[in-house]
Amino acid sequence: MLDHVGLHVSDFARAKDFYRQALAAIGYQLIAEFPSEVTGSTAVAGFGDPPKPDFWIHAVARAARTAPVAHIAFRVPTKKLVDEFHAAAIAAGGRDNGAPGPRPHYHADYYGAFVLDPDGHNIEAVCHEG
Image (cartoon, helix red, strand yellow):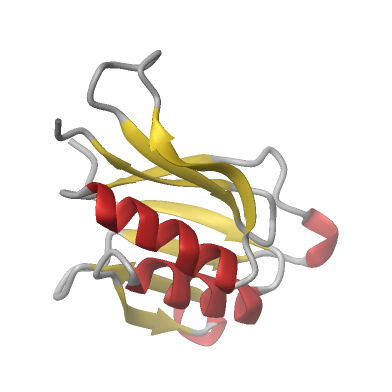
């Protein structure tokens, strides 16, 4: 069982704003934020369903970039939330990487949507309910 996951981002402020808007649609909030002076290395921000952050972003120097890109999927209880996540992520500056809809090649009840964040990470919301 995973406790938390993190992504490196090249523009911390931009990514924090993107995730604040995109994840709000599925009930996630910015819960914790620590500057590099506190962590000893880099600025971090944690998002989640209060009170615990389980999705973190970490600033990296632009020269370091964020390759390879990652795929993170957030499980949600309804197809409506998948749709709302996709719309919010696009409005926040994400790029469509798969409109909301069924993905029967994964399984009969798989309904997901994919958006590329500002660094090209593939962020998904998925509902497994029939």
